[in-house]
Amino acid sequence: MSTELWAWTASELADAISAGRISSVEATESALARMEAVNGPINAVVDPLPEQAMEAARAADAELKTSGPRGPLHGVPITVKINVDYKGRATTNGVVAYKDLIAPEDGSVVRNLKASGAVIIGRTNTPCYSMRGCTNNDLHGHTYNPHDKTLTPGGSSGGAGSATAAGIGAMGHGNDIGGSVRYPAYCCGIYGLRPTAGITPAYNPSQLAERPIVSQMASVQGPLARSIEDIRITMQALAQPDPRDIWQVPLSTMFDAPLTHRPCKVAMLAETDDSQVDPEVTAAIRQAGAILAEAGYQVEEVQTPSFHEAMMFWRLILGNEMRGGLYQLMLKNGDEKLKKSMELMLEGVPVIEGREEFLQAFAKRSTLLRQWQMFFVDYPIVLTAMTWIKPYLDDLDVIDGTDSDWFFRAHGPMMGTPTLGLPGLSVPVGTVPGVPMGVQLISDRYGDRRLLEAGAVLERAIGATLPIDPRG
Image 1 (cartoon, rainbow, N blue to C red):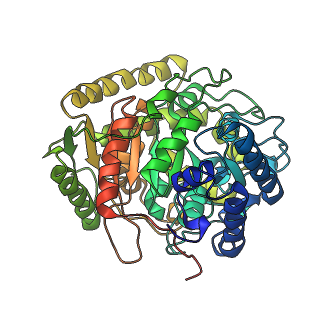
Image 2 (tube, one colour):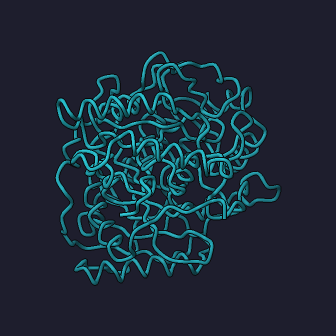
Image 3 (cartoon, rainbow, N blue to C red):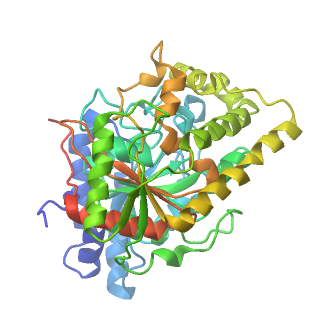
């Protein structure tokens, strides 16, 4: 293990703290020092919590002596996204108008992480209203990719991806309605899990109104980390019950046992006619396929149900839901880059008139999900791209002339799954000088553990993911 505690993974820290080899205070002091040293160049953590973190670390050490570890992240320093409620802090969601929206209580994410013993050292940046693939806003400023400042760190959990990749906190929390956990993980060269919809609760006491139905069903909370084991133990914490979330399925025990090796059939989709495909993306997918095949998985290059069709459904349903409410708030409170990005998202999306037509359009979800469920009977895992292009230039979505059809076709594998509730795992496989690369593993609903098992096989082959220094 590295002598620098900030470079340890969450699971390494949890084991060492629980065994008494190090203290939470030591781990937290190291994490805070790392944040002080490297956060400036990347602006990933926009609400540091040093006093609260040290108080929590001292309490974790005292509790360990009297009653043992509270949970799987006992004493481990982590970050959470600034769009979830932390009692007494503003849940800004990157919106200037919400800079004083103080959370009256901890939301589901923060409550469950604290209950697991985690020490929250800061809150990470998100684009305005958490609705872009790049992470900057007028309130908290610009978050940069620690690998290359010209590339997007991803979004909307770009702060979490950037911080975790740079060693600020052993794990970062994010949320995903169209790729907002998986894409930052891809762009920053780490692991990110979009769990099956319903596994992780997501209630914010500060919310001004109930979220509309598609958003409730498609949005999930998930971890970004530098190891698969970190993903597993964080999911133990995040998936604990919260009766305030009406959608939650009580499956937290899915992540309790250590991961095993259970090879299965894998459908590999390394190329597509639906989009331009960067050759580096195809190479990474084939590299991952070869690793899984060597480990006993039966990898077959076959055609899957259409990601493009599923992505177009995502745009149609979510876009029209937004037109009915959130988009109006964005026009009122959003920054100019968000408004420009939303123009790109909504460009060419047919307008659905009336409740009956919307419900008829939403009914197609059953057809699409049924196709995928039948496919997963034969191929429990799909290995494919996160997007068909390498991480793109920062703020590409607001550059004049960006082709919306090209943009969304390229993101089909990422955006096609959220409205279907399917889990997806981003794994850092492949190498391009200076540019993070990766692949995506997808499974049936509640196949999250199967994804982690396959991800662990890839991790053993490619080696440890170490923090990088954004200072150059």
